[in-house]
Amino acid sequence: LMMQGRGAPVAYPLVEVARSKKNGQPYALGFGTWGLDVGKIVPGRAANEAEVAVASYDRVALFDANTLALISEVSLPNWEYTNPRKLTVADVDGGPEGEIVFRTLHNHLVVMDHNLSILFEHQEAGIIDLAIGPTPNARVNNALKRPIYLLSARGHVVRLEIDRGSAQ
Image (cartoon, helix red, strand yellow):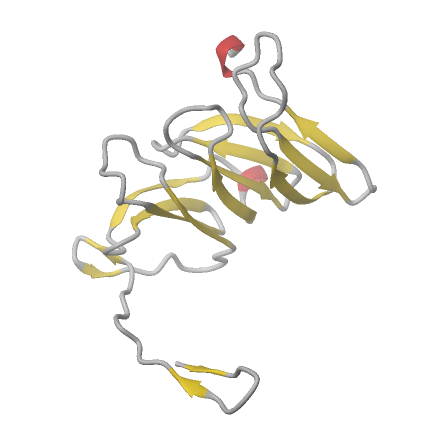
């Protein structure tokens, strides 16, 4: 690994290279892998066991961050969910683990849990970017701990606050 700083290039030895695996065999997610983040997602695992969330053209997968062994994967429900972009792992509901949050090319914001089930979906025209905000001031009857901010192609900024306690 070569890195250029202010002076001459410096060589750093690679300690380890790991590749994703499914059942011990090399595994590739295939066409259109657009999002990746690392965080604590799956409950019941040790505190130092994080997961890698990856979104490809039509699916989302979780890998063990230490071994890159596949934990689980799911196909996205239909064409409106394909081409996920800007994937991030963040706790948006105040629980002990993070959720997987991404936008799609077809104007959907999707929040998934550790089972890769869709917890929340919002449609907003022309979503360009998203950010997970800091903890807001106390709100009445709202379990959300961190709002989701969206930027649309029309120049609108939207703040979403999700109340999972009232979901039907």
